[in-house]
Length: 149
Image 1 (cartoon, one colour):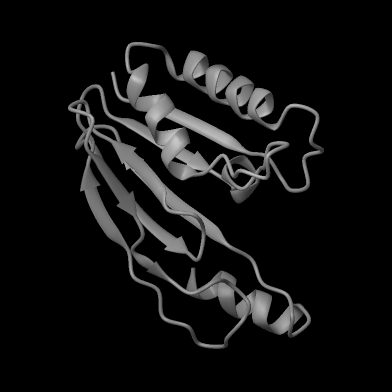
Image 2: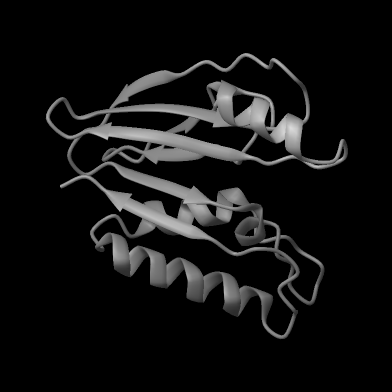
């Protein structure tokens, strides 16, 4: 992250920055090593329904020179679900000017843990778009669901 930050610092305008989440999954050890650079926290939804926000990292990329980033490791257990999303998923509004929000997204996933990752992704996408109804999507809309088997 520090190298990417320095490259962006050198090559972008002062008012530009990037958020990012970087993770490496060691399948043999069942450990995810990650770093979050100002991105929405990835949420690890445990098989028991508890949630862990993966926030360790540092500031957005490209905004400040020589920013220090930390990484963290977390064990991934069977039936855990990793939920990665951009703010366009949670910050979408309906006609009543209500935000979909992170909690609504988490509740949706926690209510359907038996579904496959692909099914959870489709359900979440449809739920967000139905919530927004005729409202125009104003931002990026990226959702990735990973499920430990």
